[in-house]
Length: 214
Image 1: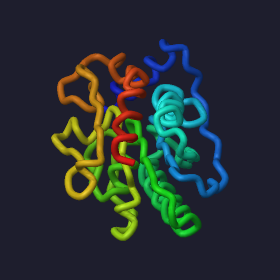
Image 2: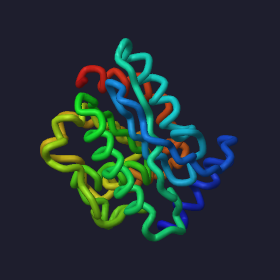
Image 3: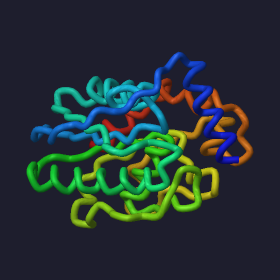
Image 4: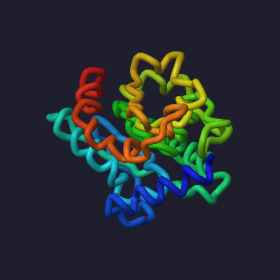
């Protein structure tokens, strides 16, 4: 199932006319009002991720004005062939939030994750993605004392949903978790891989949810 689905995702990206690229490594963000770490999906091109991250970040900029925003592309492989991919993203995201929180005491965060990147976010808030497609065990979590500074969490095509898991606990009310009908990555029995490429259409709704929580 994993090999078939990974092939379908790659084909789907090609069909959508998207070239596979590696996300750039970002420098430390300035002390803006809101910092937006974004974990892109598997093989997803774009600064923050062409399918989800880029449109969601733009929508957040529009919805959260006049607050200032900074973005951070989580530095991890986002690769199906790298067995520790999600763990590397988990570590990088948590380290980034801790460093930003220390440098910018008034800064708050909106976490964004798509597909494998949603696994990265899940793990970072203490919800294990182990056993899910391109998931893995938790290796780091955002410290409890920083939890109040996580204003909102936006997840798209979250693989843990296909195994009957979801975000619960202190972050549940601050999380919007999108799963398009038929998306096989987040819906058990789903068979429409194009649904997994549709989440850019949810950018405005996701940004409005985040704005309601900031």
